[in-house]
Each structure stands twice: as C-alpha cells, then as structure tokens.
Image 1 (spheres, rainbow, N blue to C red):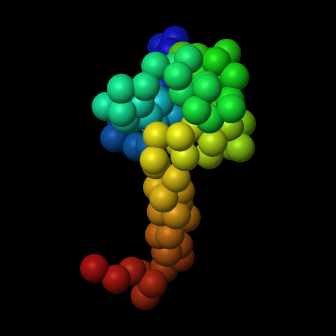
Image 2 (image 1 turned 120 degrees about the vertical axis):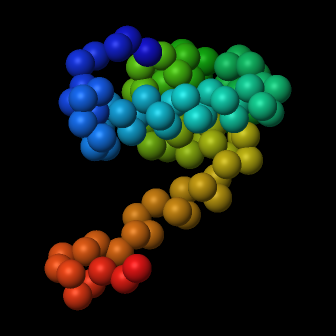
Length: 96
C-alpha cells in the first residue's frame, strides 16, 4: 500500500485512510493465519486474483468482493458488527 499523507499521523483521529490501512492489515493477517495465498483465496472466493492483490496493495475493492473474500476466510460474521454503535447526538444519548 502506498503511503500517503494522513492527518491521523499527527492527531489521534480515525480517517478514511487510517481505517482502510488497518482493515487491509487485519485482513492480510487473517488470510495468512488461515494459510491461504492470494491465488488460493481467488479460487475459494471466485474473486479475481487481481482484485485481491489490488485490495491488499491499495485498499480498493468492491463491497461484494470484500464480502466474498471475507466469507472464504470465515470472517463473514464480522460484517454484522458494522453500524451497531448508536449515534450520539447529545449528552442525554450517551451511556457509559
């Protein structure tokens, strides 16, 4: 993944770039823990090798392809955690 300037290097704040880089790093780690190569993952998931390689190098991938490759390494359930956090609009909404 090419390193770009990101404000999160200076301030502890999530950005699109930092979130993407962390997601890719966790995905690569999980794929390797499963003992699956990029080409093997392509065969298992039906997602092209080029798409998997591009995702691991740049973070670019379609949502449907991300779901397919996540399913192939038994991480499909992780998607159920997205958007679960309640939106806090004021202090009354905050629960500690």
